[in-house]
Amino acid sequence: MGDDSPLSKRRSLGRLFLPSLAFSYFATGPIGVLTGLLLIDISLTFGCDVGVMGQINTVYYLAAVVFGLFMGVLNVRFRHKSLLMVGLLFVGISALGCYLASTFNLMLILYSFSGVGMAMVSPMAISLTGEHLPLEKRGNAIGWIVAGGALSYVIGAPIIGFIAGLGDWRSVLLVFVIPISLASFLLAFIGIPSTTGSLQPTTHKGTYLESFKEVLSNRSSVACLAGSIILRSIAWMVILVYGISFFRERFLTPEGSEGSASVIMLIAALLYTLGSLVCGRFLNRFGRKPLTVLATLLAGIFTIAFIFVSNLWFSLALNFLWLLVWWHGGFSR
Image 1: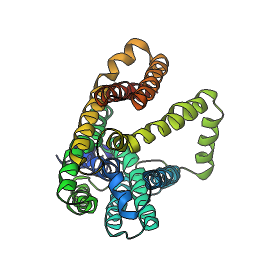
Image 2: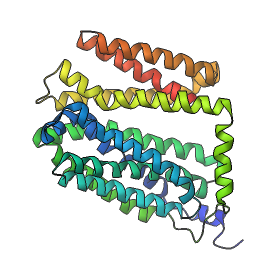
Image 3: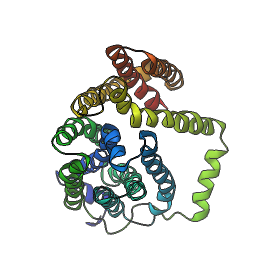
Image 4: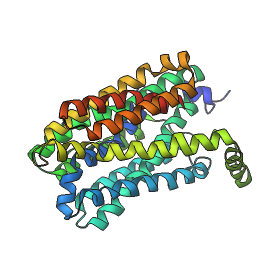
């Protein structure tokens, strides 16, 4: 077996391989944390309502969905490392463009680049574990990669709140988001080994289209896509984008509340992470489908309740309970 074999590549992995993948996943998060925390401040800059400003996230996920489908073709034509680094480059360009954006329309377009970046980085980080790691090590590696994404909220929320308190939302991009993007690009370049060729078999257009037909012809997969993924994800993103703005507008004063909002997001991220860690125990005990139904039902009740209660602390408690159970429904699917 020559030096270019998969086993040889796995043995030659350096210590930076897994940290570079986790940090790449981490780098896609701060710009979303920024808009979640400071959406009100960004809307004031461009002179529009919070709801209108929130459409930058709509365009972000629309770009992610469209390009995510396109990734199925790119994945078998180009090296995974190259695609991941291009995705990180999109995230960095988006952050720099948003910093320089002078109008709402420019902000809308440039922010969507980060959605393209996320659609490239996320699947490529997972694919690279399969390309370079043996089966018995992939589960632990993927756990660390996903944890890197969660840490963007745990670490990013207080840092962004602190920087915004000293300056504004543009200063967060300049001091935190852009440097993180650059550092992740450099770490991926150094830490991820280059391959001399694709390890995947050639996939023809017909095979690719057949896979879509097979998924869409199965009632269970269609129900999962429509209910658990599409509708559930819509509800999740609405709360993720507008949740902090809701607390700032209803219970706090929008001006000068970045610090309190960052603490709320930090606690929420920790509880979300806790839910992800204990989910496996519930999966084995209750099964995937019952757990999905129960978790989604409870999450819906908690979501409706925390929006309509008039007490800040009771509303926060219900919101935190929602975060604990929501991850179980998503993970079990």
